Image (cartoon, rainbow, N blue to C red; front, side, top):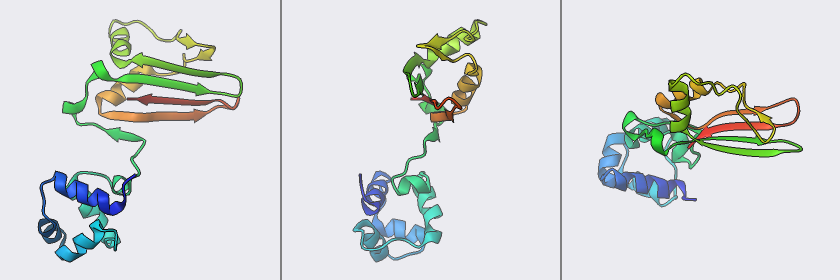
Length: 160
């Protein structure tokens, strides 16, 4: 895992920015940016939002904590490469299902129902696959849902 300073350095270089240019944009000195990148100091908390906006990332990602759910721009969404993962982890059973998202979308588009979908004893009939497809069409990917049932099962639905 990279440090905060390494992350700032990499993001700045990826933008083709100099330390001077970043400093000017944020209203600080180039020496301050240099100290951040060497992990000798941290930016003021008030600078985190403009710093994140400058690099087009979240504040969480500046600190190496990627959000579990993120949004992709339309140009980066490719249903043919996405997979719907459903993991059921319970006291007695573990079920992992990987379904190409393109298949889910086709099944729904032709009017077929996925209400009878069941894998390894895990009843997936309550999952609104149409809502999942709509979420992904709007750009949501990553972990979409995590539910812990009364039976002690954990159900995780994600799109990768």
